[in-house]
Image (cartoon, rainbow, N blue to C red; front, side, top):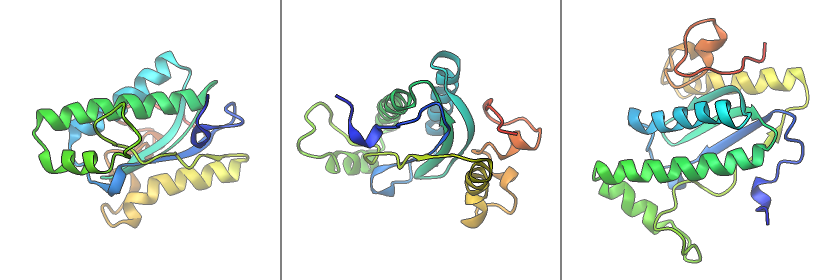
Length: 177
């Protein structure tokens, strides 16, 4: 049975998606944690038909625009795989304070895990036109500028903004234009 928070009715169309760490915990300040996300997207592009049009990773959440034949399955797989790997990483680094918060936020009815990493859902928004796609990519790329982290979108390392300027990004994407 599909969980309603992952239902994407028209996966052949691109969607703007948001994934947030529970309690907005700052986990993606560690480059090795970010690399887990990037590696997962690269794998899904190669093996699951994921088209990744743009992304930004901030310290406690990420936004991306993607489509796939089964985008809902890609999203479930992404969140499950990355959560498990990041928790392993936190355990290796003995990040006890973060692990305690992740343990305490796990709902009592979830007996299949010790921690809750991602907030439930992904706030999927279908992109139905070229102007909406440009708006969402602009939002993604300017998010670190708006927060005051950098002066130019392409200066934020964990973003696809460089890809759209013809520069090398950290991973390959599927440019929209």
